[in-house]
Amino acid sequence: MNNYLNIQNSNIFSSFPTYNLGGESSIVKDTAKVSDTNLLEKHAKADTFNENKEQAKSKKRKKILFGSTIASAIFTAGVAGVVLLRGVHGSSFSKIKSKLSSELSKMQSNTPKDFVTKTTYYTRKGAKKSVDTLEATSNFTAIKDWICDRIFRSNKVTEKYADGTAAGFKKVVDKTLGKKYDKVEIKVKDLTSLLKHHSLDSLKNMSEKDRLQEINIKGQTKTLEEWINILSQQSSRLETEFDKSFSLGARRTRDAKRTSLLADLPEKIRNRFFKDKKTLFNPETYKSYATQDLTQEAHRELQDDIVRAKKQITNNITSIHDNIKTSLAAFKKEIKPEDEITSETVKKLAQSFEKFKNCAGENEVKERAKISKEISGLIDDLIKSTKSNKLYAQTEQDEMLKHLDSIKETVLSTGVGSKGSLEEIMTILKGLNKAKATTGQKIISDAQYKEFEKLSSKISKGLGKATELEINDYFIKQAEIKVGSAATDVASVLFPIGVGAYSIASSDGKDEKISTTLTTCIPLVGTFATMVYGTTKMFSGVKNLVFAAGSGLVLKLIGDGCDRLYKKYKDKGSVVNVVKDEYDRFLIDFEEKNTTKEKK
Image 1 (cartoon, rainbow, N blue to C red):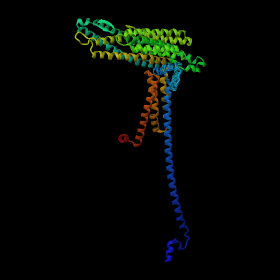
Image 2 (spheres, helix red, strand yellow):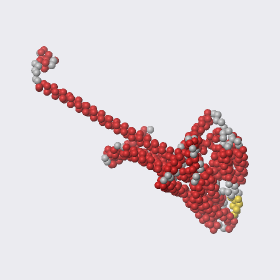
Image 3 (cartoon, one colour):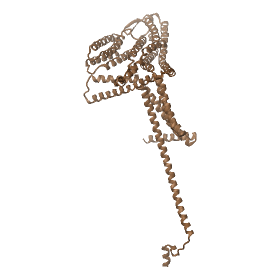
Image 4 (cartoon, one colour):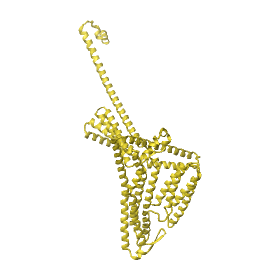
């Protein structure tokens, strides 16, 4: 029993004798070794496979990351290229610059003392410096356009290209401006037709007693028949003045003058930057946008022509006040901080302008004439003091005097009978709307007056926008075309196409090429193409940059979405499955949002 227990507790094979089985024993041992080796190899292969798989995934991730980085870099470079190609300028940018200059001018007259005022002052000063720096980038545009234009004109083939693009751009900007004026012309015809029809009806339907009754309008007393005759005259004047100054023929005449005034602009650009080495590397050369700076005289002359013509049609108090305010802001910009006397006089002048604007009631004409005299006296004082002021050089004095002359001319044009034909018509109609016929009814009903008022407002606003476009963005666009912007703008679209083609060619495989096209090439080319489109539509520099960058960003988002869908389609192999997945994902997101809202 004990022996049995001992056997159980020990190796039972230990009691057997050991035999040398030779080959058979070796085979068993070798088989065990092979089995172990195969198992190890199997695990090693599995580890290697997993490692290779992870490496492949890692490489793919790095490649995608690298591709995204390159795409983003190319897209960012594209937007930066838009800035460099066109610079930052335009009427909207000029308004920002003028506003900052005006605010700084006000603060300079009183030395900032407290912390808040000092902070505001230096913040505005820093903003003004940034604005000036941004505007200086536009000089790259002028230099680039001028150099490229010289190159294009070095042989007949490229010269034809330069002339063709310039003519094409000019045709587009002319058409854009023409549409603005055409809309106003339609409204003018609508108003004069309605007025003519109403005046005739009034004369036909009213009794002699009504026609001869006296009506007082703004301090003037005339019979109804006389007022209706004046309406007819003003209606004819409105049509005549619009045709004389803003019809297609009138615009072409003004355009010929503009072309003549800008004829020597390329030569002026050459002298500005390339006269000698000093001018090219002188920081002072780049402080203002050369194309805009060198055309100031021509711009002012054409502006005066347009404003003078506009006054014949619409010369209401708001537009008069705005014209004065613009000229006064330009004058204030020239005032030096130490010239406190001039600053004080300008403050008084600004206060008088506000009183002038707010005149109303029966004594409006007399009150406005009184304030106009007061304003003229202040302007005369400024003219005298400016001429004798030793703080300013002769060129600075001349510039300041031009602004003062412009203000004085505007003020003097506001006397009795100097309103635009549109204002004369509306003044009479408003008076007739308040007056009553012998029957007790209004001579012009409220509904009729509102119809006239609506048309008048559209004419006034439409003409204001059209003339502002012609004075500012249209003028600078014509100047840039003269320097050679059209040819370089069109050529600039070829640059992103070339970059895009290179990035596609550098991509590995069909899938990556499609991905690069969707996520990089299309947004990049779209950004530049949009910029060129905005240029032809006379979008100002800042507006065009925002427009181009915004469209590029939208195209980038669309491209990324299309790329994602394409990759899904490739994996799923079915458009139906992709659409189903997208729909399911939309439902899940929608449910999650609703659940979150309910919890809140």
